[in-house]
Amino acid sequence: MKKKLRIAQIAPLWVSVPPRTYGGTELMVYNITEGLFKRQHKVTLFASGDSHANALLIPPLERGIWLQHGIRNPHAPIIRLIKMVHERLSDFDLIHNHFNFFPFPVSLHSKCPPFLTTVHRPVDTAYAETMKAYPKIKFCAISEDHKKSMEEHGVPVAGVVYNGIDMPRYEYNNRPNDYLLYLGRINSEKGILTAIEAARVTGQKLIVAGNIVGEGEWLHFMHEIQPLLHHENINFRGQVNFEEKIELLKNAKALLFPINVREAFGLVMTEAMACGTPVIAFRRGSVPEIVEHGKTGFVVDTKEEMIEAIKMIGSIDRAKCRESVEKKFSLEIMIDRYEKIYEKIIGS
Image 1 (cartoon, helix red, strand yellow):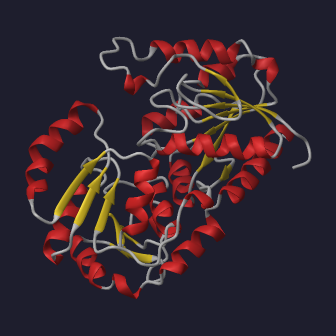
Image 2: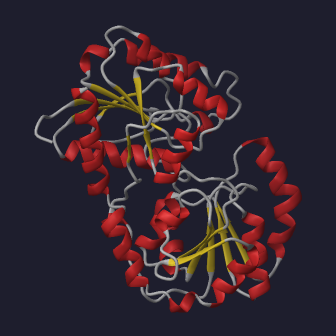
């Protein structure tokens, strides 16, 4: 892309950019912002004040909403964000939104520049109807299955861009330790109970790391999950920062990803493979696009199949896992694809 653009990146306000612990979308916003900056685009980042990037940072609040315990009006900063973007519309050639539907009203202004929203979450009917109510906005999916899901709901898709990662930050390791890893939100949708049961049946050590958000997830954790964590082969780590995450990923002999929903992408799978760690995942959403069955891990349909796959994990070449991410999910490839979409929607 020859022309250098003035681009607004709108991040979720829940946690900082990049995130201190959990925050897949926020990590992607950081990667995109840094990648565009390196290509000399002028990037403005709307994010919480505890964020940092090479872009110009405009914060609607001091710290991420999830870090402000006891906050009574969590959506108030979001309304302020909308006003702050609205006041600066003439500063941008393009607005790139990652904050779900919250900034959509900005597109109603007659002087709003081209507006792209990357949809980072699964789409249901209510979300789809909201997207269709804002025809000026273009939408980007993060996997082919995600695109299919959006189109099934009648939402036009401007393009597909896989989440890309900064490969030098992910250390490759060909000599893992003797444990399996579960890394992600600790809730029923992510399949934590299945991971624990599969490890138990196979007699494998399992490290569980991730965060818990909201009262519903805490209740599920306290009543359903915590009693299982006392098993001698289960090591519960809770939330981890980026460096701790890399240590866990590179030293695991496999990542278990028994997802129970139609996951739009599943960033942790590419992060694991970048470290050389194969993935055993349920056939949901984007999983078959990311994991090559028998080459970079195993795509399974049931808990019983996951158990059998654990027994075969030694057959996977860890170098092939790293190679797959370099070819399909690098930061450079992601920025290339976004630049093409920017060019397309600005010229339309």
